[in-house]
Amino acid sequence: MPAIYSDEWYKAMCDLANSRDDISAKVPQGEWKVVVEVVGDGKSPYVPEGTVKHFLIRFLDGKVAEYREASEKITQKGLNYRITGPASVFEGVAAGIVDPVEVGLNGTMTVKGDMRFLMQNADMVNVIFEVYSQTDVTEWDKAKPPYN
Image 1 (cartoon, rainbow, N blue to C red):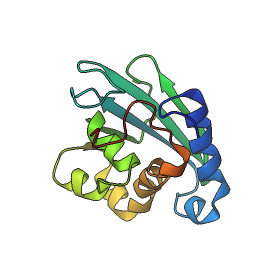
Image 2: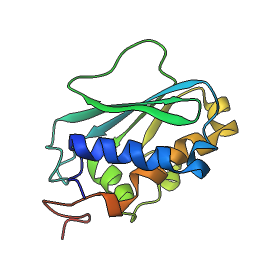
Image 3: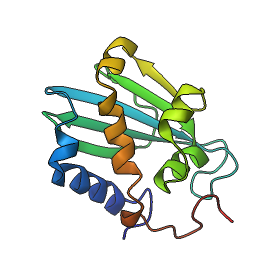
Image 4: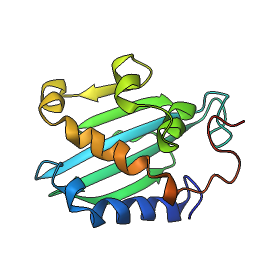
């Protein structure tokens, strides 16, 4: 089990997503680029307050072709979605104690992109969170949410 946010963890997330045909079938064909921004909120022991972790997840024909962390904000053209939220919320999703749909709907996480397309293909975002919430591939070396 790799530690959350490590290079090994990103690889484990890709391997998990790509090993499950039920997940791949939910992602529309073609190339989709999703940026996830995890904002340090003073609660997470993994993302210090005032910092942001930036991730690029690139899907190609239903498979995760790339999942990596970037050292700065990802601004490249051709992004389809940008999902931003507090680190403790993302980690709560990873721990299986926070519902990603609920925090998306109540504004705790923000989603920028073509919302009409997103509504038609909501499973694409659910794929990201389904893979992310596989706690059996995450080691919580500092503390597992809710960090008690």
